[in-house]
Image 1: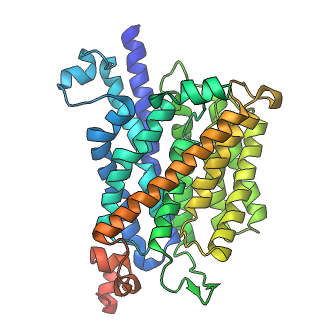
Image 2: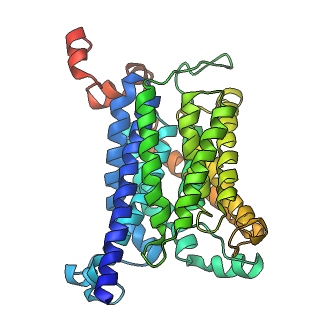
Length: 409
């Protein structure tokens, strides 16, 4: 029976890891559909290479920082033959699952800095982010490192800070890192003219929609399988994820006046926000959480890009940074028993923990991308930016046959 339980957990978590891995295709196609045609190849390559870099640095460095586990021993040991490693390689699929979360950080950042960032410096920043910065917040929240959970939150604020599936640890952190990177990078050429925003229409609504759908499907692995075992799985997580997604879609539809970009990103805003409290909220609370997130995304994306002139190409600060921040706080509201939740949280701990996570993300983004900029230069040259990252960096466009026929290469 023990072998059956262990094997079942391995398979369960492996399916979750595969679902979240597939979400990275969603990140890629969401960016492909949003950027201009001359930057589509770069979007695809960035997401795939970032995932590979994230996997390697998380394996050798990041996972050890977050959980104190090193895989640099024999295959027999890490498959369950040594103390500290679960039987049948369960510890290995846990790494795979959590690695897909870690790799989401540079995928989030990628959308904000699209169309004008150099490729090599961005890869270096990814390695630093996933190898050093992200494991600090991941370990503090999910592995209770540094004593913050037992000290500041449980003792002082009444309950441990809760982030079941990463509204703060993954999304808010990634979104605020992106804001720091965007600030360092500056706006794209021609994006603002004498203080007036110049719109850059997306290259493909169908690709944008495909990316959103892939992310939505994979999100049920992201949230439900954060239980990390069959014993801990809860249908409440699936229901709350579904309701939050629907709330985000409908709210963005209304607030965004039928704009398809807002509709498809509204679904993601709702899912981002519900991650933290998806295992304790009532479905009505999840619906409200998602709907508020949809409005936050639409309003703050417009305000930040048009009035504040933050050239965030995919709106990742509003989508992940602000919706994630709201989700962490909402867990302390709709997760309470007074509003139909299961309880075990306090508003104070959720507010403080959420703000701390966002602040750490912004600090990490400013420091890491400033360091990379000073070392290697972060911004593409004006000539390369006008030509497009596809030809300037990868020497090939999204439609090579058409380019050759028209003499563009």
